[in-house]
Length: 226
Image 1: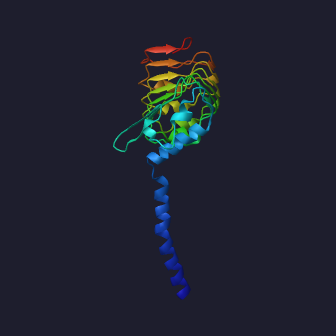
Image 2: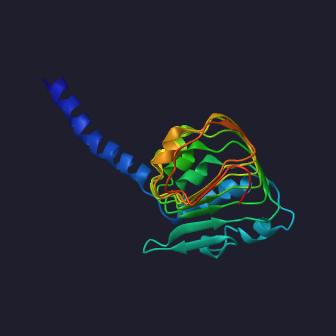
Image 3: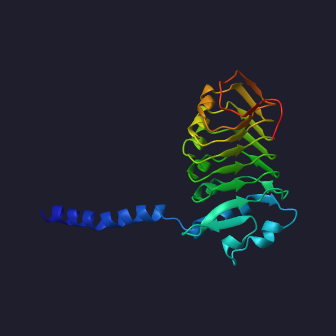
């Protein structure tokens, strides 16, 4: 009897702390954003202008860093734009921790490697601009499962391969889709035809086949680019 009472006491004592640990694991703030950006900085092997090397300092506010904008009542990072800086590096999974991010723009650099699946955590993301890099591998289907606000997806001029994921159709607000000049193969997913907000699409210079019915599309391009 005494042993059972002791066990119950231990369980009652432990449960609140276990619950608190779970809650703490989900709490994010500007420090979370800072660590995510520093993880990106650590992945950059060449910064020819030393912009991030000098400017992204742990002694200054994240919101004052080059290419970063903060907004909202939580004052979190909403924009990460380091396009056209000649950077070389890879994309870390910690980018998925930028939970208030609306714009991710890393266009016209030399980023290589695969897209981290953790980008699927950016549920507030509206613009994803990663064109003109050296990204490779397949597009993970899971990335597009939870991007309900995505309006613009630019991944052209990379080295991406494999099939186009049908989960693109879950991005119901998508208006601009550019996946041209890659190594995509297989059939164009017919589900893309369900994107009723789509205004312009470019899939040219791949090895895709098939057609989709898109009566609402203003500019359906497969042989030019944007």
